[in-house]
Amino acid sequence: MSHRIIIKPSEHIMHTASGETILQSALREGFSLPYGCRNGSCGVCKGKILSGNVDYGHSNEETLTEVEKEAGKALFCCAVPLSDLVIECHEIGAIKDIEIKTLPSRVEKLERVAPDVMVISLKLPANQRLRFLAGQYIDILLKDGKRRSFSLANAPHDDDVLQLHARNYPGGVFAEHVFSKMKVKDILRFEGPLGSFFLRDTPEDVPIIFLASGTGFAPIKSILEDVFHQEAGKAHKQAMVLYWGVRTKADLYMVELAEQWQRQHDHFTFIPVLSDALPEDGWSGRTGFVHEAVMQDFSSLESHHVYACGSPVMVKAAYQDFTVLRQLPKDGFFSDVFTPSANSQ
View 1: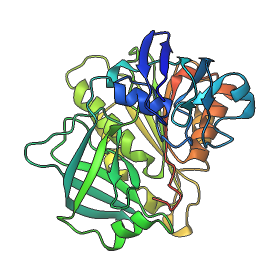
View 2: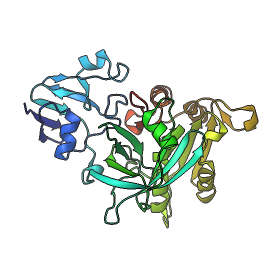
View 3: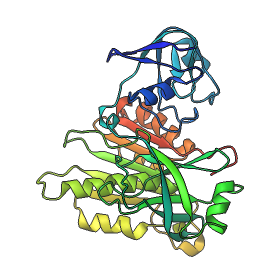
View 4: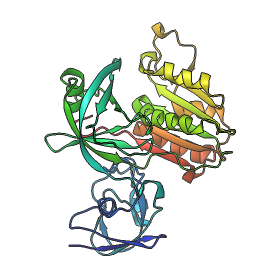
């Protein structure tokens, strides 16, 4: 059964197909609602139901609490309309004209850059290009109908090949395939670009903090390379700092690149943080949890914007501590949560 949905404050109107979530309907009809994981884990798509009823679907209790449901909140990637609705959320103009495509690609290169990280380079057909915003991701479409999400690590202007950073999760079916069976020239189908993790238009006097854990470095790499490309020739450049948290020194799989950015760009600072440095690492740099390193360096984040990408634990802790303890405005925190699927990624 189809239902009519009015989006506030834009007053846009869309119609659902039977069984569709609010987000699925929006994407199908070309409305750009914020979203990330599409499985109820990250909370980026959380909005308000002003009138009407929904089936809330399956989601993480921590991501959508009973108190929030009582206050009218819902996760639009999970909520299925049971009646006509009026919802409240801020649409994102930047992605409304980006076409989501399903395309084939060929594995051009496989590079193992850390014990558990593989850089996959994908080549599109000669007559195809993927238009995307730095920070967005694609879904690899598997033969069993399942999907695996990977952020694009290359910048949009550098799109000769698409670069993905794949981590080898224990027990991960697709991860095992990547690390033991995938070969150059293999064909992969994907859908994309997806997601609303990208750099917003920000006044030049607002400093930006990038926060990555593990392969959360991938979309931030895309964003930073895009920024550096667009900044060429500009007189004023925005202050930016990247905190990259990993367990051991070997996990800083592109540390030379980040250090090169710091040498080349006076307005950019790179701070690696190890949580479990090994004796053989000989590490004299920052240690502990990566978001706590930010807390140590900034007594207030009131005038900053933060872009966080990586594990759910890191992103949630950063949001909580930054907004409560460091006065970061809630609308100044943007995130992309990496959530392995049930059989891992």
